[in-house]
Image: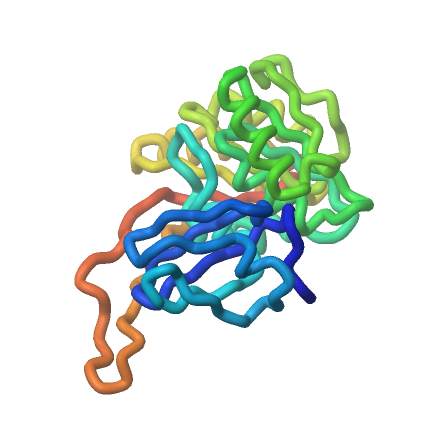
Length: 256
């Protein structure tokens, strides 16, 4: 597939720096390795490379969700990809599902959900802050996923409009205040996922979950370590993203 003007592409420079560009006629993008001429890119195929004005190689690649997340505009802490993937699996989100995302943030979780529910499903996102809704909406438009997401600006203390939901993801400072509202919105056997960064928050959530008809309560933390891909000095990188959040999962039943 050839790259056209107006396409968003992922640029990888041979020293490991990377960028996302929207290709525009007559434009150029300045980097520490020289300028990248947009007109040199238009008409080429993904996987090819071009040279900067300083003669350095630049690879042309499609943009994936991981690149979108790392390069997106954001004004809040993101769900790290090491956690996001596991959350999506534990919530069992699939084509045609109706799911709720509480605490929209910059839109990365809603975007990941929207990719999975497809055109036949729906993501319902709830957020109190207008500035976050504006930012997330722009990101979802850029990623061409806004048509699968319905956004509401309000506190979920009064509950959700939707019922018989397949899964709910809760990313708020005091999730224990909203567990009954989540139970009311979920269908039988529906899945609830909660993230909390501190142990005290987790314990409060667990105490509150035990008062409601939820079963199979699990708490997880992911530890991922990246390694240097050098076939002669293979070893871990000196730094790693360690604790990011605790993840709590459970399922609704009608009664205990």
